Every structure is written in C-alpha cells, then in structure tokens.
Amino acid sequence: MINNIYNKIYSPPKFVLVEEIGKNLEFILKDKIKNIFKAGQDLLIEVSKENLYQLLKELKENPELKVNSFQSVATYKISKKNFLIINLTSFVNNFSVLIKIEISGRELENGCTEIVNVLGEFYEPVNFYRDRSKLISENSDIKIFCQSLDGLDCFDLNISTDNDIVKEAYVDIDISRVVGNHYYKGLEIYDLIAYISRFDWKAGIFPEICLCSAFEELLQLKVPERARYIRMLLCELYRISNHVYFISNICNILGYDVAYSLSLLERERVLKLIETVTGSRIVPNFIRIGGVKKDISEEIIFSIRKSLPILYKNIRRIEKIIIDDFLVIERLKNIGIIGKEIALDYGISGPNLRASGIRYDLRKDKDFISYKDFSFTVPICRTGDCLDRVLIRFNEIFQSLKIISQIINKFPSGAFIKRINLSRIEFKSEAVSHGIECPHGLFKIYIEVEKSNINSLIVKGPSINSLILSEEILKENRLEDINLILTSLDISPGEIIST
Amino acid sequence: MPSLARSNLNILVAGLGCCKQEIFATQGALYDIQRFGVNFVSTAEDADILVIQGFYNKKGITRVLNIYDRMSSPKWIIAVGSCVLNENLFKLESKLLSQLRNKVAINMYIPGCPPRPEAFIYAILRFSGRD
Image (tube, rainbow over all chains, first blue to last red; front, top):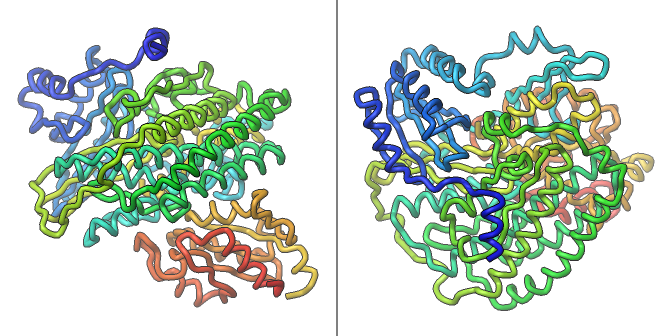
C-alpha cells in the first residue's frame, strides 16, 4: 500500500528488456556491429574503432535509449591482443552498455587517444582520461598534496584561485595508481575473494558479493535462501557502518567533536556486530561461491535484535544534534550543489545521485539478491548540496535498520552454502558483468573466463565518477569549503587504486 | 624516548591502505588514544612518529621519504599492516620494505591485515615505554 503511493509520487525507472534493445540496435546498425549479446546484467557490443562514432551517436541521440551517463574506460590484454572496454549507462531507462574495441599492439597508445577523442565529443567527463599534465601546469597556481587535508585521501588537487574563490580545479590520481594490470592472473578464486575486499575498504563485503555473484551467474548456480539473507544482513550492516563513518568525517571537519565521538561510538557498535558474524571488522573474506563461509547462530541474531533499537535511538540523537544546530546547517547549506543534469552526465550513482533528486537504486530497480521480499523506501532529496548529502545518509541508515529488522524476523532455515568443487570446473569462454549497490553507488565487476582461467577482471567503483565531478563543483566555491565538499562526496580510496 | 615527546606524541599517518581507518578509529570514545597524550597531525614539521601503511607506488615512496626528511628530530617510524610488512598486495612495487629499509630505519612493526585498534594502542604504549 505504502509502496504503491510512494511509487506514484516518485516514479521508478522503466523496466527494459536488454535483449530487446540488443535486437533493435542490431537492426539499426546492421554491418557496423561485430557482435552483440547480453553479458550478465549489461549489453555487450563488440565494434571496430572506425564504427564507434556512429554507435555512440545512435546510443546517445535515440530517444528510446538515451544512454547519457559515462561510467568508465579500462584496458586489458588477452594473449597479445589488446582490448578497450567502455561502460555507459542510462539511468532513465535502467540499463547499461559495454562497448568492446580491439586495438592492435603496435598502435595501442595512438588507438586509445583516438577512441578517447571520439568519446570526448559525446561525453564530457572523458577528458579526465586524457594526458593533462601540460594543462594542469599552465592553469593552476596552488597544489594541495594528498592527505594534507581530510577530504583528500588519495589524490592531489591543483587549483587556480582568485581572491579565495576557486576558478579551476584539476584532480591528479597518479599517486594512487598502485594496482598492477594483471594482479589476478595465477591466483586461486579463493585468494581473489580475499584480495578483492581491499578495493572498497570502507565497506569490504560489497566487492566480495559482487565477484561471487558474477561467478554464480557464470555457473548458473542458485544460492540457498539462508545464504542470501545472511548476505543482505551483512550488506546493510556495512552500509550503516560506512554512512556513520561518513557522518563522523563530516563532523570532524566541522570541528563538531560531540557528534564526531558519538558517531564513532555507534560505528564501533555496528562493527562489533559485523565481527561476531564474520570474525573481521574491515575486510571480512566471508562470502563464498554458492553461499557464505559460516552459518549465523541464534545467539548472534539475538544480539543483533537487541542492539537495533539502541542503534536507532542513538543515531536519531546524532541526527537531532546536527539538525538542531543552525550553525552546522548554515555551513552545509548551498555548498557544492550538484544539479540533476550534471549528475546524470558525469554518471555518479548511489546517495550522491539520490541527493540530486534522481531515484535510482539497484536494490529496488533490479532483482538484486532478495531485496524484493522487504518493504523499504529509497530516500531522495531535491537540491543536491552538502546538507542533502548528509541528510540522505541518515535516512538510508534508518531504512537499513528497517531492512535488518525484517531480515531477522523472516530468517529462513536451511543450508548456508551450496558446496561445489571449484578445482574441476571448466567455464565456457564467456563474459559477465555484474553490478551491486554499494554505499557509495554502483559497484561493477566485469569478468571474462575461458576454461579454468580468468582472462580479464575489471573492477569499477563509483567513487571515480564522483572524483571527476568534483572538478566541476569545486568551481566558484571558497577555498575553505574544498575539504567539506570533497568529504561530502564520500570518495573511497580503495576504489581509486584500481583505475 | 625523551619524556617530553613521550607525554605528547604527534603521529602522522601516510599511505592509502585500510589500516588508516583502524588507526583513526582509536580517536573515538571507545578507545580514546588521546588519554595517553597521543595526537594525530597532518603536517610533517609537527610530527614525532611517521606511520607507514598500505600501498605505495614509486611516486608514493619518494613522497614518504620527503615527509620523513621534513620531520624534526627526534623522529621515529612505525610500519603497520601486511602490505608494508610482507610485500605489496597488488605486487606492482613489491618489496617496498627493503626499499625503505635501505634509506630509513623502521623502529616498530605492527602485524595484521588490518591490525585492530587495540594492537595499535598497545604498540604505541610499548613504544613509549608505558605498557
């Protein structure tokens, strides 16, 4: 009942069949496309370098497709062949496209720059991937090194100013490029699961679930219901921990020590619950292909049930402390505003997108784990300033608590893992892309497998899009607000190291 | 360690790893590292102890060494977490420790991936001779 009313007020994205879009595109662009098929959740289009322009034009300008959000670009190598993969999304039509282009080894650099130039005609954020060292040195006069401010965790910031007002801002992520191109080669799948949680260390369970779900999709394995519920429980606990940490960071920058220490206390309470379930606080290594590592006992469920009302009460208290203080509100209001259109262009997702007034959440819009069993709302805000980004996270925490209480009450019995022998498995040569709604936004993994080898593994976190957008929204703001705006975007360093 | 530094330790945390989150968790009301006179600073000139953790590339290592040079003596280095202790997780710039060891002396190692906040507090107390 409540859901129906809510859906009428805030219309959800359309439900689109990806196969149908594929057939339509194949019909329109006939000879220009090499191959088109559904890879996991996304539509994968193989195209030559020459025909890329026409494909992009069709994708962006066709009113039925409206693929207007740029997500990421990545390169990989399979036995002397180089590939470039572009990820584009349509938040309005609720589907995303992967474009795969083969580049010969000799003209790798030139080919990449050519493709980026073509992409740049349609999508503005692509300019971030160009060589900008000359542009940065000419146009900026102040360089802020990474970790000298709280908001700058993993990148350098070059700015040019005019009387305390930022005129131009350029982000430089050279320092955080620490991941090798082929770190996943020669690794066992279990090792890979342990590694992958370092890609988002503010909420380590999400990369693990994303990777395991992708493999489950490849194997066409159905996970037991109890395992799915345990996964959802951990997802929501990590979401709360991440959002409370975010609020503590904001309070730290504002110099609001009372709310800072109170929110860190609540985070410890959540981390303690996570520790009783997984045995680890930050990097759980708990999800397995086909289920989870350990079962949850009745005692743990009881302890979670007991601490839910305490968490609710205490976080409400922190919210009240922050909202009641007009100084905090004045400081956060009308700073770093992200409009609807710019948010869509730059492809940000998660709470940052919802704060700008666009309702998009994978938990509701796609059949992701088993979230359709529960009733919850996706909170949205209107303005998209720093205050909205703080308030929306408070609302999400309360929705997460609501989901957890429903999970606990409905907890099904049965097996917690479907055991399979991974040593004997041979995959067909397939590609799969899987996305998940992590606390920062849309976390995606793209895998290509052949027999028992992983040919390519591309991890794409949502923080990189927020980082590219920060260049735009820092303009015309004051110098002292830089720290606050960057922190309010909730950029996770773990996601940046993989780009 | 001089008694003046012992009663007012300023710590600078450098690096991109997940240990940073656990180190800053000690600032919270539950662990409250500040009752031992320990503060976290973000300028090299004010720091007594440099904490290195997480992943570094070549540019990162030169920057850490630069920070260490700017610190005023007496100064110490603590290495935290498996990334620094064994080898870099993602193996791009592996054997970071041997590269650093050639140039600076590391005073204490804290194992774990990531180490718990209690481990960090214990290490700091042991380092300042108050365990």
